[in-house]
Length: 298
Ligand code: FAD
Image (tube, rainbow, N blue to C red; front, side, top):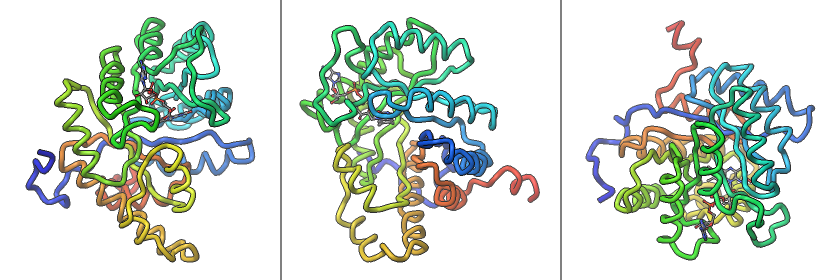
């Protein structure tokens, strides 16, 4: 069912892109952060998003970076927000403050405890992301994104219960789901088909991970339940000392996935930039996107 399109991936429409950033650890990282934002902004993304550290640990820095990117680009910026580490009243207050400052987009998540401990909902908190979506929409009419897991969230009881959880998030009012990155494009497409069959009609926006550091990505993937296929390991095997070659391989992997997803109708795509512009720029260029100045000069 997922091989719907006979169109060659090369003729896929250029995707509508958005870029995820994370707040730098300290002010020393801000010049590089700004440079990345400027380079990425030139591609006219639909929006940026800024992550929230585990357990809410980057609360102030996330907010400062959201303001910074909004001021620098004039674009919508989604503030990631998690249920963990705060009670409902604190989250509602924060949401009111975000709305009052003109922030309209939130990526609403459950989050994880900071120390890797099992997640236990706090009695005075929002238990799951669907509850957070419901609570935030009682505060104001936010544009809310939520997560989705083509390879199933690692703590889900089953693939079906995870899909039910996604449906609850849409039923509560989420505007779109951004997927965890998943290198097996067939798995993403099958997941979208299963979501549609389960009555989920909202936008599913694939998250695409440009691989700037293979080992780091592989370590993170173990924690978040994303698979690292053998073919991908083989592609990067032995390239630790040749970053240029590695970057070219990484770009080709992301471009191929993006084109195939776009050819299958998944034209809204979210790039996990890890605050590094060059690889994402190369990918955007290869997808047929141009920086504004370059396009205007042409
Ligand atoms: P939920 O959708 O609430 O689901 C969590 C788990 O609980 C799933 O296994 C689900 O099946 C299960 N579940 C849901 N509802 C119920 C229920 N009623 N009863 C029993 N089980 C239930 N983390 C951060 O800390 N900061 C970030 O900025 C951040 N950004 C992210 C962005 C994206 C696009 C993605 C995909 C993930 C992001 N994460 C972030 C990671 C996320 O916080 C973790 O994956 C976390 O473990 C789950 O959060 P969730 O919102 O997906 O949870």
